[in-house]
Image (cartoon, rainbow, N blue to C red):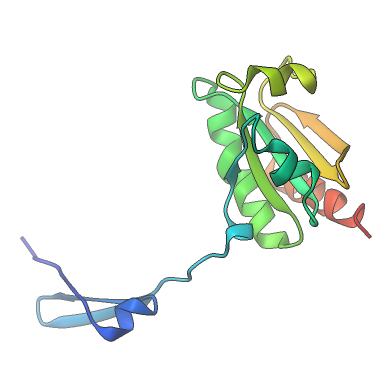
Length: 145
């Protein structure tokens, strides 16, 4: 068995990690993300601030933990939003945030809605191919121009 030991160094504080195994050393870089780069779990209390009042367009993924298509779509949406960089991603668990699901008439999962200036500007329901999701994110971003 090859043992791997992480070395904590000054570089680790800046995002670099080193590992030693069998006399070899590897260094990897981690990029620390700003708050706009990772999904926000929106609740009834935070939805207005995180989505409706956002200065950037927001893609909202309405999902449920038990929904397999939601689980498959989540990393696709996340990748498309990260790649585009002009929109934020918020997630709403419809099981715990039932009033939000009701307010936006969410009856099927997954449902993805793009918001700009507090208004829904685009939406789709169900699983989509990565290229179609990327196109959707691009359209939401361009409606902000």
